[in-house]
Image 1 (cartoon, rainbow, N blue to C red):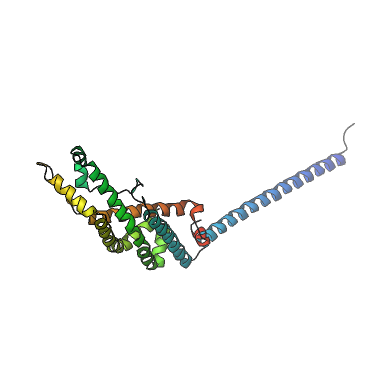
Image 2: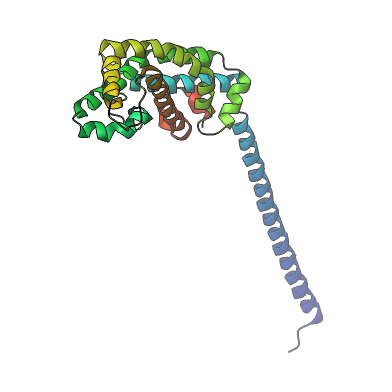
Length: 253
């Protein structure tokens, strides 16, 4: 029996309505998803902006001063103790370069004990001088500007250490050298090393070595101290556990 025309039209109308409703629902769903994506993107951008601006320049400067003070203090404490230099192979002070070239010959002619004593006394003198470092660093850090702080935070992993090198090295030398000279004289290192150098210089055909230890030891002591400070700075930048204050955590997140 053929389907009446009116019924056919009704079914077609009903089918089209279902199709329209389905398409409408899909469009609504797509619209919601698109809106969600736009909202998500907006939220992420806002969070990035908040992260970038979550601290002021004054907070950045204060945090940098805290970070440098922490690194400098830990570095100074690490060297200002028995074996702070002598048993730390990264900063142990060797004999001067000209004496290093002669060390094997010295040991071969029975001066090994003298060489060992000279090495120990050089490092002990540097360890005594480490106590003077903190005040010098504090003065340099107090002179740091907001501009300095921002450039350090944005700079290389040792930017803070380089700042201290530029601003504290002369002060460290001025403070360290008298202490090292006194320490070397107290243990007889200056005299013993001078005697050792004199004995070696008497060997025919050898290159003469300089018996002056104070300047050499001072320079090496300062260089070793900055090696430790650079390590502490890297920890603060890369390791959240090394950030000892809330401000450090906020700025170096």
